[in-house]
Length: 367
Ligand code: NAI
Ligand code: MG
Image 1: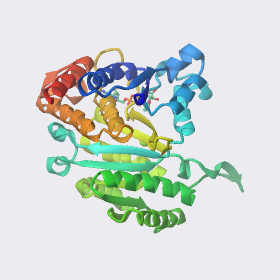
Image 2: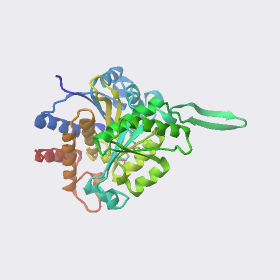
Image 3: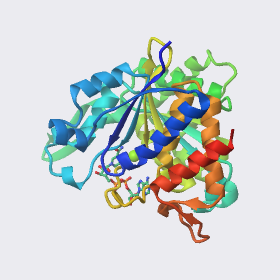
Image 4: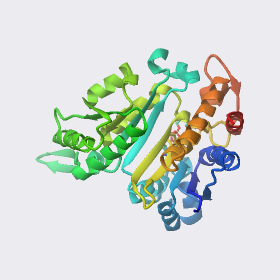
């Protein structure tokens, strides 16, 4: 059998810098754990525009559709701000998400003990926190028709439409239940069934899908209450599933429970491929950080944790993903800090590559 395949798209700004550290980790798993990947690399975003005049070449798109998983750094930067909308770096990322039909966006909020002081919440509220928000990514109010700004009488009216089909709800619900099965077997679905018909249907379909997962404890919450509960006592949750709009807000809110943007990974999953694994794109939540690009300051952990998610969700290597997360936990406990993680208590300052090296060392120590 051939090795699992991974397409790496470093992109722009700090993208290539953090991806270089991920390559060290991938090489480590190949050399020390016998986990070899067929890794290929290609251009996306501004880098692709510079080379081909388009933010995503058709060949790259075809490769993304053929591999087991795609790992992306970040796209964009001031150099490209004045490009025509159709060739902006973001369009490359949007095309990937659309053509891979990635409808399920996974955003973990995980608190690394050594960073609990970084949270704006009390330490005991976030210490040990490990929750996952599943956001529907390809439908809902960002896509529903009719939409636009129309003339009505003697004034303008702005219109967007929240629209969900049963099958759109069912597939993201299934993805969330599957995730809950691998985790704490607890799922909370959030909508506003009290004021929105799309929310009523959402709740009905989630309950229907849940019948196939009797082991998962399912609960429902209005999304506004969900927002309050997330900051009041986030540890009451394990997996949360919600629509595109509420998920946009709730996942950003949950992410900040735990501190720095440089620590946040994500996964976007689509329908199962022939091998049973979902189509998948893994990427840090942060952007290309032009303000620190080229200065060896970027924190590579968000991108490395995105690879850990790939190990878990695309390659069935949950134990190795946990090994990598534990190595990061250890490095942080040792006080190793990129600039963004340097708090008042100080620490051992490292560059981007210094952080990658420290994680590799901690992996070695885990053997
Ligand atoms: P950003 O996430 O790039 O940066 C926000 C702030 O966080 C900056 O001060 C940056 O230095 C810091 N930061 C981000 N990642 C970090 C890391 N790994 N280590 C240390 N510090 C980090 O968001 P911003 O500034 O709004 O956007 C910059 C560019 O990135 C824009 O062109 C934007 O369009 C693009 N962008 C791309 C995204 C993607 O590729 N998925 C997502 C968000 C923005
Ligand atoms: Mg957002």
